[in-house]
Length: 586
Image 1 (cartoon, helix red, strand yellow):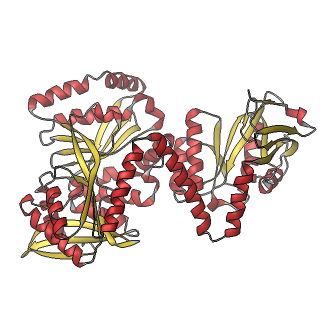
Image 2 (cartoon, one colour):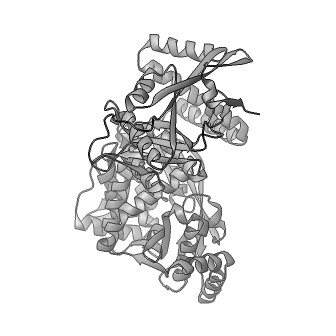
Image 3 (tube, rainbow, N blue to C red):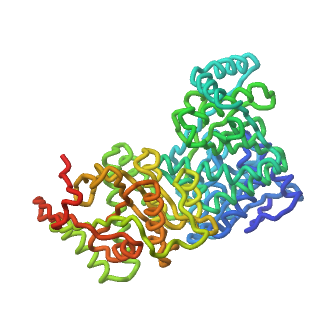
């Protein structure tokens, strides 16, 4: 057996054919083992990963393939190329040749002076597990293995078992009730598209729905990143050529309310990346779509399993009839490195056993990361100033907030022609997250906005540039009862029509163009046309914000203040506070 090591997967029809033939001869064939999957990863993540692919030949026959990757920052460490995208990863060969193939790969890795090998998402039922252990010992790698994910599966079984499963799935009360409500709105349709010309136009709306769904649940979707969207695009294009792609949708009339970016390969229908339309979440459209996939699979003799993949979501337990364990195996040539990894794994297991300890440790990690960020900037004076503010701010503080009223008629400059205001919804938040995925402050703001939108705590608006990009955000809420967290007060409104503009934010990449003043001026003008009385406030220490407020046309009315020395607090109001008398929160 001869091993060839390459750093690029060639666009070679013969290699594709031979590679996929090996994938089909695995003890448990998976779409993740195919040539198409590896090529899609290579095209999408080239900037951060360098492929290292080992091809085993006997004469002209391909006997084995394993696709590794070097992280550009760690050239002496390798992982499975597909580890970040595939639910299962493995050495690809006939099980009978697996021992010789794995041993030859380990020998080549050692020859190339690879010090660490990380094998994530390796199925526990793969014959590779025992082989890896033996080869590691021979080549002096120190292994650490631990359980990774438990993947839920629906095993369809015999004809009688399929019929029983189909009846049980169709009779679920939750499914029948929600489908009935959907049918009252419009005809309900389930579609499973496999051709590229059908799938390509659907991918942008799928990505946006996925990002919106994650924002609504306080998380950042991996589809906010361009590399992940490119990967799904390339993967769908490649797999659809072989008929293995299956993009499933549940539609109410023409409105898609649930998606599953999935696959049908070698007897498995895979529930890979699902999402739903957040506006219809009360009807559990994802649950309904999965029910219909299981029902459809029962009628397809070439499908044996509906694999629900990685993740321990509760809804999967309602369908699963079996589970499949995956492993995380790390192998280190350095014994001290092995000891460090083993100690870290043991400590992590202990911490996870106590959620309270885990929360505290994560808090300290965030604080240390903040300190490290200041140190990396190299500005020690700024670091000392930041530490001084944090320490003294916890002991002594004086907070003052200035309040401004819209005068009613403003003859100052308006926003540029073509720029418009649009009310925030999850679709717009998702578009913003995709555009500003690399800006941590903006992503934090969008997460906060998504939670506020979900709770219907006021309403948000965005200033939209000529190219359709949201470039500034702000929120509106009734003045009466408005909670001033900075001063620990609730406010009384000066009139029933009073509303407060608050939580204004310009993404860092859009700053320096006066967008704050433009946005609040346009918003105040719009609110005034709706018979509202707009107000806004700013911290007295934030001079840039106060200048923007005054530039927009708002008029200063009064200030509220609060001083604190240790645990003693005292309020201080300006003489004109009777315009909007505040009350202490109970």
